[in-house]
Image 1 (cartoon, rainbow, N blue to C red):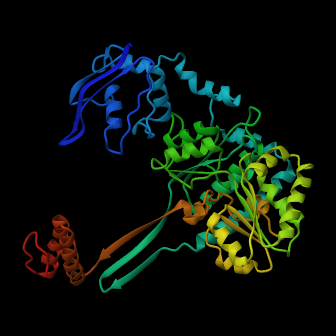
Image 2 (cartoon, one colour):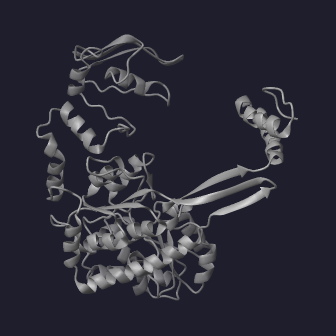
Length: 509
């Protein structure tokens, strides 16, 4: 058989640490070869050495007869390498990175490539993805007056609740003991990128939820991006962005928009935080970029749960389940009830409504593949099941709604009573519709004004006595952990402000 890969006595040191020790193997043409081992075994180091991403300490590697140390560029042009982690060049914008990759791969017309991608996927290739003030005004003039009034009404409700939330966030300062002052300040994130979906459904409300809430939080730079619809900006989305307080508005969609906002381009300065819903690709892009920038939360498909007893009818339950199932083909919908009759009647109602619902193709797929009806014996059992499932939207229609409000602890948002529904929460009532899914409600709430605010502590010692007193405790606790340098930070103050002779590198008495 023809030998395609030969690794001979490969060894790699990182300082004194030996990551790979005298590894040898060969791969013949037509073979499938795998490296298996625990974390830290040297698999990634071996792979990167083969491509000369890192330099081996010793040993030789040939691929297709080419020496990896000499012919690494030729080797990279022949094979692919998919790392398990996502990385970007720290000091390179998205546009610069794209051009760099295009240069390495000798792609023609590299200056026009980004625009060509937008044209290919969105049928949109403007001179600039950022809308000018005149273009924004033109979009707003296309919005019907009734639609404009509705947008303004919705934003008024959302702003009012966000301002009340902001009022609950307080700076604090207290003197914990004489001469020791501790406090914290609440500081807005300095730049935020808000993504507004516009593919299958132009989600005007998402502009309210992200842009407006960031504005109320006091974020000084808010940029917003949404994909074009039918090859042009969506007037209502642009209007909602502008009225919500966006400082920059872009017509750019998908992962390219998310990456542009997070990494930056020649014309877009990068942001500190990304927020907003999106499809699976947008969600994955946010996940991979998390750490480089902050994000609101990890979002999955929309989930809705109805908790009901015989105090409500099946039509109401079925309508509320299908109302959210139409979001996508994989949107879970669940009824939890202690009434067998309600469970059976709801199944019948769902079948009836699916015959007349215009979005039944999507809703049907969601219900058939991700729908559940769970029959419980008691309200206590219903509560336990609901808390364990931790759905995004939880609609409660029972004879004891307040009991559920008091005892529910894991969810995205609650909708209490038959007069309340998820759609109102999504669009207009005033609470935020960007909520945790996939059981994330067990550890986080949804998007709110506080997500855009960082709480930073500070401390101040204002008397010699306090500096010496606290320093003695600090010295001893640092030495307990073996941090001599830490202890000396305390000791020097005990000596200077307390007049005590603490030997260097020893704990204060």
